[in-house]
Image (cartoon, rainbow, N blue to C red; front, side, top):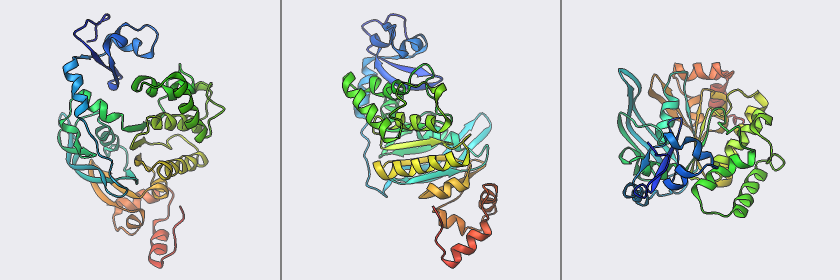
Length: 328
C-alpha cells in the first residue's frame, strides 16, 4: 500500500479508484500532496518501484489505417469461479469504424468491454490492441495503454465535486506537462466543439442527462485517444436525446477518425451508428456483420432483438431484399 510519506526508493505510484487504475504519477507527489484529488486515495494506492515504472517505455502501440484491424480478440474466455461469462470470443474491431456489441442482460458485454480497456484480465485468450497483447502486460504497462483509450461510462461517472472544466481537465493535469494556460485552451476548445462552451463552471448536479454525456465524451477525448469505448451511452435517456448521442458518436468517428466500441442492448441504436455489429448471447458470439447483413440474417435472436427495439424485422428484410435504402 502507498505509505503516507513516500521514501526515496519508491519513485512512482499507480492510483486506484474503485479498483480501476486511474493514472501513474511520482509517488512523492501522490503520497504527500494534500491538495490534489489523488491525495484522497493515496492511503489505498499501491506503489511501484522505479524499475517497474521504466517498463512503460516499452509499450509501443501502432495506429493502423482506417479499415485495418485495430483491436483483435482471439479465443477469449472469462470465468468467475465456475461461472463462464465469456466463452471463446473471436472478434476484430477495425480502425476508424464503429463496432457495436449487442446482447441482452448477462450476455457478457460489459465484461468484454472491461477486458478490451485493460480493466480486467481474461481467463484465457488474447487481446491485441495496436499489435500489443494486453494479456502480457503488467499494471504499469496497462496504464500506458489506457492513455490511448477514451472511456465514456454508462452514467457518465463525472466527479461531482468538480466543475465541468475540472472534470475535463483532470486527465491533462495528471498525464501531461501542459501549462495551466495550455490546459485551459485545450479544454475550452473541446467543450466548445461539443456545444458546452457556456457550461465550464457548472457542476454535474446542474447538468441534464445529455449534457453529462457530452462532458463525459469531452473528458474521454481530451488526451486525443485512438480508441473510444462507450458503455450503454444512451441508457436512461429519452428517445430524442438518445438519437442526439448517437449522432455524437458518429460525428466523433468522422471528425477524429477514432476506433469506436459501443456496448448496447438497443438494436435500433446499433443499426443507426454501427459499421459492424457483434451479437453476444450467453457469453458467446452468435452473429457478426454490417447492419445490412444482420437485417438479412435468419437468426431468431437477431429478429428478437430487432423486435424488442421497436423495429419490424420483417419489414426491414423485405426492404433489404427490394434494395430500398435504409434510413440512418
